[in-house]
Length: 431
Image (cartoon, rainbow, N blue to C red; front, side, top):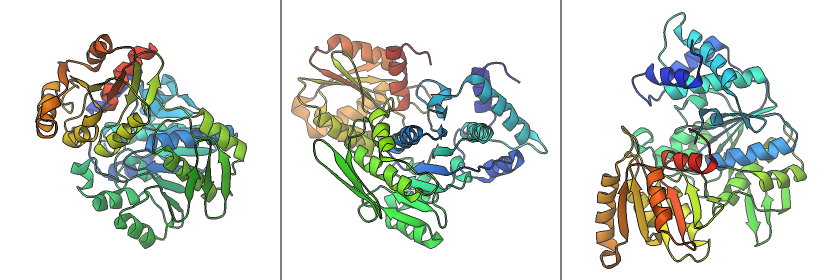
């Protein structure tokens, strides 16, 4: 139908009037037409924050254990192909386009079914994985859990990393409501890992109601560590002398412990030796998650876009040591908790470089400045930092780099769409 991936993606984006349209009826109908099913173990990963890190660690460990691994994540940073990985590598355009054509044929006959961009592309990648017959499939949940397209697949093990307030217009405005939505990736009789140390009661009750095998952080698995190494303790398995994951950040041990809990729960079908775990943690990479790029001034990229993730970012910045000044490049989506994000990091920032993100969802730099000025006037009127406005993240970064001293640090965060062009520019990739 189309000869270029970009043309396919443009078409897929145009066939449904809404970007987000929650529900599984459409996905299940097309999934049935495609006869999508998997013979290998499937692990789904949901949660507010930490999903990408958890998926990356699972992939790295299972690859080192010798398994053929398929990984689906979203959104992508620079290239759409990042969403579909086989053996640690992004899939090329041609296999993706072949599956897009298959999904298009299936959704049109015998009667047309409208699919959102996310639904369409998820089904295509699932069908690609089915054809490749990997040993294990890892699926990152997109939004929530109960009505997300990924939840059309029955997982052999499901992980919920954390529960906090995000996407409230779709999932509810309390942790209890959001926890209930995310708990729906759990399945009867299957391991259900919860890495949140204080899970909402709704998640626990749902897991009990359906008879899932709930593994709770602090009860069924835990971790302990010193400056050199850490150890995992599960229901019947201990792994000691572990090196810290290569991913930076304050919450990575909690994510890593959840990964090991999932592997313990699946040990009969996916046995993993200690050496694979050590190597996987040592080699894991995930762009845009507290990613510190080489050079001076220090440049940090983080896709944090809600208060919970931003609080973790702030903690990570505190753990970095002394920097004379911190310059922040910030661009956000207007449907996010902008005030909560600003509040979580404002005390660490000396210079703000606010940038526009594309409409309709992107917030303008002017609107961010208005919110930030009001917040600073309330909390620190005597020492308000400098605020500048820019038309794009790359323009904001250029200004920050021209004004920062060598010993300073620059933090780019607020959205995948803020980090992506900066990462593309720095790595020489084209989006």
